[in-house]
Length: 173
Image (cartoon, rainbow, N blue to C red):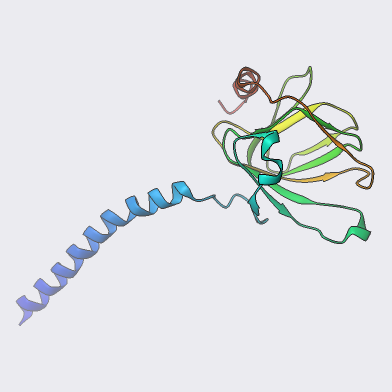
C-alpha cells in the first residue's frame, strides 16, 4: 500500500514538473503580445486618432473629462521605439513620467533621458518630440497649457538617425 501511495505521489510530482516546464513558454509567448503594466494609470486604447503623427504604436487614456475644470490630462503609453513627430503647442505642454524610460528633445538641443518622476515643462511654440527609448516601454501624463486656445502644430517625423543619436546619448547604455 505504501508503495502505491509513493508511486502516486511521484507520478503527480512528475506531471507537475512537466506542467511547470511547459507553461512558462506559453506564458512568455502570451506576455510578449500584451502591453506590460508599467504604471498605476490606465493604458487606454491604441492611439489611432493621432497614429499618423507617431512612429510605432502608442496608447491613450484620458484621465479627466470635466471641461469646466480646464485641465485636460491623459496618460500616453509608447511601445519601445515609438516616438511622436516633431511638434509644438501654442499653449505649451507639461509631461510627468509615470512608467518606463523615455526621451525628450527640443530642436537644436541634445536629447534628455527620462525616467519615472521626471517632469518636462515645454514652453509655448517650442519644437520638440518625445517617446520611448528603443528598449523600454514608456508612459507619461500629458496636459497642455491654455487648453481652450492651445493648438498642436505637427511637423516632420523624427528621422531614424535623429532617434538613434538620442538613444546613443542614453546614460543607461
